[in-house]
Length: 306
Image 1 (cartoon, rainbow, N blue to C red):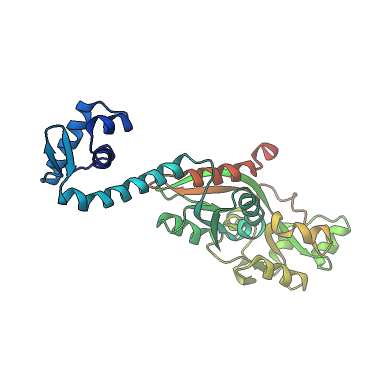
Image 2 (image 1 turned 90 degrees about the horizontal axis):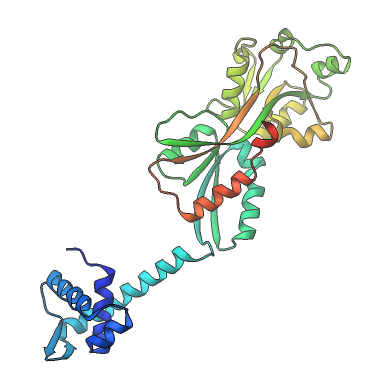
């Protein structure tokens, strides 16, 4: 059985007007089309819905019981159509962001989006890259923003922004002092330091490990912390050095609390990375999701970093 909106509209129009000609005019159909749709509807339900006496047509008891339900369905269909064609967006978005993005980029973008669309609810989950990928894969999130690599077939990636990791230290750290004296920082200098790094599974840690494996073995002198703010506080004490996105340390660099170490003398040390928007390929994007993605792309920096 396949009941169509056309059949429901025909039934409601005839039931309310009790006149085929008036009903046909009210929904812009010919009388023959009306009669055919009504006949198909009754056939699918396997019961007549009207008493017919010549040109007169009135609901029978079955039709009387059915009419309120049909009117409710038609009202709901109209509401759905209005939502689909309305210029106003409403609904909920479930967004996931890896730590750097979730703490230093996403909040301001989301705030601006909510100012433009106040009827939207956004639930932002912040985790490491692997956690966000897993949640998008299992449709627990509508969209993810990640800073690490992802090669899962069902995940669609869109390059969003360029970012750069910076190796940094406290202003009074020996390497910061060495740099202040215009001495070059070497791979041996970095290898001799204690490192404070993000946990395995984070995009920042993955990029750092891939970029520095030929220079460093940090496993012997390593403190892992799952939070960029905690890492910065530990570095400020002089306990060790670290590597985070320049987004995460921009304020401390401006105020002289931390010092970015110049490691340009290390050949082939590439700490640049891409940030991605990820979606599940099996999920059809709603207009709300498309609008939010467009807002994200407006805040990309691909042109200025290319």
